[in-house]
Amino acid sequence: MLLIVGCGDVGLRVARLMAKRWRVLALSSSADRFDTLRAAGVVPLRGDLDRPQTLARLAGLADAVLHLAPPAPVSEHDTRTAHLVCALARSPRLRRLVYGSTTGVYGDCAGAWIDETQPLRPATDRARRRVDAERRLRFFGRSSGVRVTLLRIPGIYALGRAGGDPRERLVGGAPLLAADDDVFTNHIHADDLARACVAALHRGLPQRAVNANDDTELRMGEYFDFAAGLFGLPRLPRLSRGEAAARLAPMQLSFMNESRRLVNRRLKKELRLVLRHPTVAEGLRACPD
Image 1: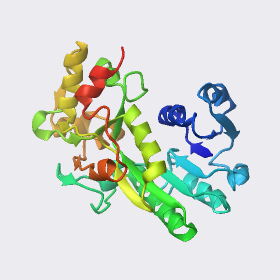
Image 2: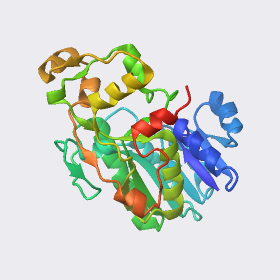
Image 3: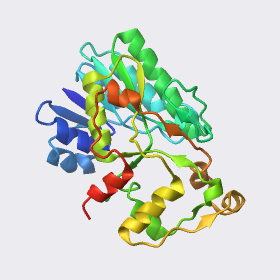
Image 4: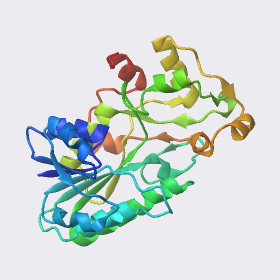
């Protein structure tokens, strides 16, 4: 039995892949999502990671957990993961757990190629919460014998995915950095990420981090310029870094302050994942309108 915690877009894609082989449950704090979950072949389970008293029934419920829930947007600690680990610690049958972390845990690497041995230097509270979650889960895995895999996830894209469809930004017109100031970004198609989650549930090594990115090597502006050409939309305006600092919101600017290129060797060798969309060029061309 698989329990998905944080069953949004990627979780639903995983559920559809797993439904024929596993019984899939999903934790949800909102009854409004129950119909959507049932339509994907998922059994809804009412519970709220911000209210630990609602999580008691998770003990002994599942053999595997896919944890995709984001931290609450406060402090440098992930209280939601802390509450989940406390509930799961009483489970005698849990054998594996996969956590969807972020590549933001590495901080800025000045465009260098890095793998999972890179020291973690999170530069934002958002990333520091993910580091906190990773540490809690690794400790939980070592102390309980549960096999924990940490998937470090970059920008997730797919047409029609809220926040992951490049056409949204192209239509919105939010500016990018000028070429001389631009940063390298990393990507994964939502379908390939779902397949990576399944592969990690089956083949992930104990207490192991895995970069879950494709083979794309593009700067942010190059990515959106490619999408603009593909979909016949105007290119976004460019700003110098100084202009961006004066005009953009801190959250938007934070994504322009970090540059890195991720090695995905573990994804391919250890999880044995063959990417269906090795680059954004193939992924966006394959997406239906």
